[in-house]
Every structure is written in C-alpha cells, then in structure tokens.
Amino acid sequence: MDAAIAIPNLLYTYAMRFDDGDFDGAAALFDRGGVIVGGHRIAGREAILAMWQQWVKTYDGKPLTRHITTNPIIELSADGNAATCQSQWTVLQAAPGYPLQIVATGRYRDQLCRDAGGWHFTWREYVQTDLVGDSSAHTLQALG
Image (cartoon, rainbow, N blue to C red; front, side):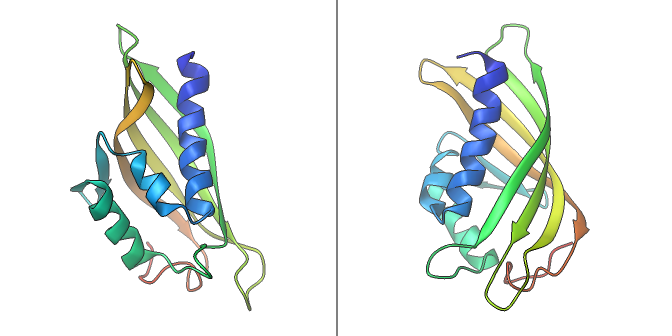
C-alpha cells in the first residue's frame, strides 16, 4: 500500500483502538518498537499497557474519548522503507457529569518502517502537550 495512505491509516488505527478501550490492540501496534514518554523508552506490550493503566481513566473499559489526529507531515527515507511522521492530536471527551469538551492537544513524532507485512511503528514519541483543558475525567495524573 502507498505510504501516503498506509501511514495515516496506522495513525488513525491507534486512535480508534485507544478510543474503543482496546488498549491491548493499540499496544500491539508497537510490538516491533515502543513509545517514548518524557525521554524514557518503553518497549513491550505489557509495559505500554501498564503505563496507560497508570494514566487513563476508563468507564466500563472505555476512556470515552476521541483522539483526533491531524496534520501528518511524512518524510520517507530514500529507499522508501522507513519514514518519520510528525502529527498533532486533539482529545475530546464526554464523561459522565462533564460536557463534551477538549481535554488537551499535543504532538507525536513517529518513526516507522515497512517490511513484508506492511508499515509499522518502530517508535512513537509523545513529544509535548500544547494545550490542556479539564483533564480530570480523562487522566489519573495531571497533564502538561
């Protein structure tokens, strides 16, 4: 599949799985890599799941969020088998007792690779949180 379609699809698959409460499925997207948070590399599905469980509130297993991923800037390697992608995220939430609201916005920096199975994440860096609203219904720890 063309990188211009496959890479954004990978970004959106992460968002959909996360919003559906399929944290295991979202973490599986990093089986051949990991995430970088605050300069710390976290690899392995179990470690990534544990991180999210320490950060994200759920309601009957779902975070009641919508991660909107926008503005992907994709740069392919010369051989077309690796890429970097910078994108922005916006998290919306409508939790019990709260109105539909923007919780926060920020940026990802992804490193990706293509093999016989297609495109996959090697690393996703949670670069920064740009704007923070009321995140008390979404996170177990303060954002920002």
